[in-house]
Image (cartoon, rainbow, N blue to C red; front, side, top):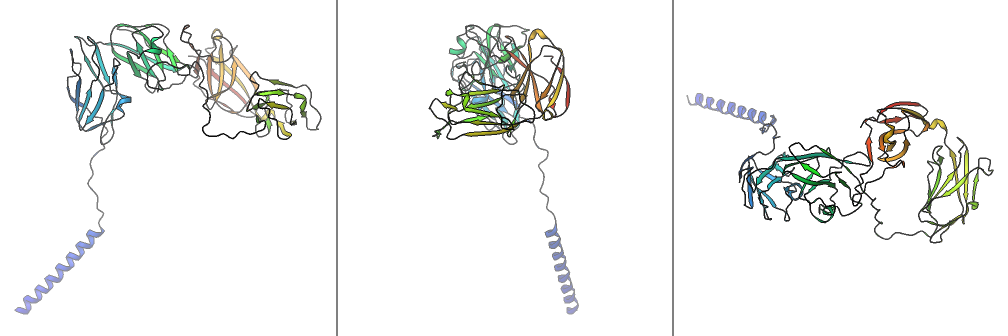
Length: 468
């Protein structure tokens, strides 16, 4: 009997060991899938309670707390949060866990509606979901002001949008206020250039837009982007939207290069040849680093492919004394040579060429260009339209439009953006506005929706709609 029961125990032990081994092997080969956390949170934080309550009347405190349904954090509150009317001392805006706190550092005006626009400052701490354009309103008086003013800001020179501009409102309508005082109200632009003031009182305001580079919210430089409304704005229950056209009265001068710049003790110039090819539609130019003290055209030899002197040309020096233009009717495909003697010119430092320079080049051929014929719809000659051809945001060609059909045989190939300048003074170029003293609005440029592709050796035809 002992041997029988002993054998059973031995068999049971062997079977148990085998089963445990198989379980361990299968477990080691199994693919372990961690538990999922459910769908990703895409909802922004929601305010659930505040002290005082939103739209409270007769408020005279200095602290506002707002609780949310989840943990929050603030993104650049000094830049994103706007208290209106604009205080002398900016409020302190902080967050901790689910609570946002605003501490007012300036005394409140009586019988005034205030709004705190948080912009895109509030987001949840886990996924970064932004609570966009959340606004808290309170009044120190017995009513909440409800007037609104909306509009859009457009860059006058190119018809584009710069959403970094701000829009300002002044109760003081004197011109000097925008340069010497802070605005009573201000707001940001949205991505499409639009703006909206809400909770305004009934009244009269001066309306401006500007590039607030130094943060003082004032117009203090003619190189600063600026716009002004043509009339005083009166806020009512049905104030019409306003479009502002921004401009810089003066171009910003390029800053000098930092560090020590090595000065070459010779005459330095550049030409406008394209891979040693001369354009058939643009003149040849020499541009100098420094203004010229003198220029002697007799010390330049202009030769053709047979090395014979070319005739019928003219050198023209511009008013800055930094550019020479060669006027000549180029022969397609012809090879040319310019030989510049050392003493052909000297700059204001007295520097000449260090040696004789020789430029060998050929004129382009007509088949390297495309021909173009444009038909204009909604054409209005009285607005003095000028069609601008734009490459890489630079106007490379301007054409005064005098008829509903325009054509040209030689046009440089490329993918062009088209704009229309409404040239008030008929000088063919865009002119900025001027505010102080004259209130002159800038000339307006309107982008044309359709792009224009010019192919070489091709007859290109397009219809251009000039509707604004």
